Length: 152
Length: 269
Image (cartoon, rainbow over all chains, first blue to last red; front, top):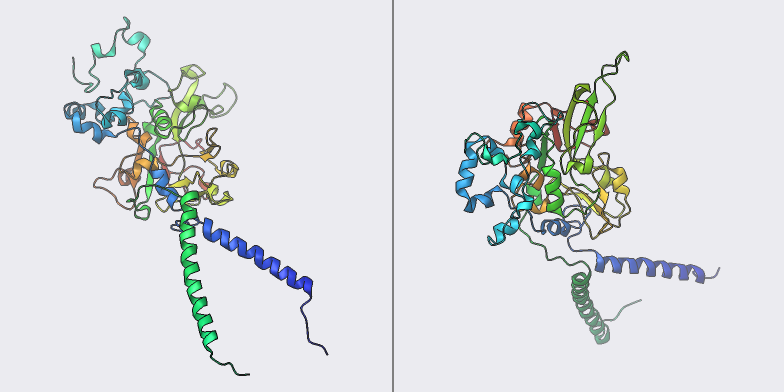
């Protein structure tokens, strides 16, 4: 009985398999990000990358730092729940540099919230702007937006 | 067969060991160099996602349909122009039944013109034909068992430890499976980046201690945002859960959303 010799086609197949699997392992070693698997089956750095965008809205606290008078006035009336940026528009650019003014075009008009719409809940103060004040003057003639109870 | 320790064999083994150490070090350096080129990130650190569990609560009875949330979301997250929304408002109109039809209510109509971004026009029917009408703000439902994560073939979308379902834009191949999988229609394919996009709960804001933009601008506190792991004194989320009967959308799917609704009609889906 002669000694067993591995058939050459099997040797070639084994070598080829080792080469393919080996190159996959090498590529995986070099290309898998260090943070992959940090929290789960995904790239952990994706979280901090998504967190690295810059905000556009500054938040009510940032407004209070300079505009504390308006802030106190707002806290007394029915509009106390409103954020400054709800009506005035995004203000991060203004908070970073006070010289950059918030455009008046970003201002949300009163009727955006207070125009009558049958879908709106009944507790909410609503008007019909066509009949509410027929001469069509500005809301601020009779109402103070920062404190709706106050008479100007 | 005996093996003799010779000078030649010892020197050979030492040489192999040195070559092994040097090549391992070289491989590490090469790996770092490769990753600087392909997978680098200059992102800030300092927020531990394992220490938070974010929640969003929505009181539908407080929503006045002003659309400030949807507009703020577009601005804050630079969402592409067109019919792409990370959060939007739906208007439900339930008409009175037709006389003699025997029904208790008419067919429900749902609309959301421009995601409600610029408010809502007059309803398409006279006021006295409406039985009931209300607004429902919608956003990513922050599913505990998120179908979108399960179908992603490349691991680009994932449930972050803080409860937010996020998309890694560098891994997303834009196949759109997740958009089909989301039962709440909260995802879209961005025409700019050609990748899937969705509500991130304003991840760049909540990691800085700010509220999401939609919560910030909501004039009636219809949206309440908080951390389940760190309740603050008089926590609005705890208060909301205690005072209201809580609903989630499509509970039969078993997705266990972490967006909690109160005062919604059974027609809302």
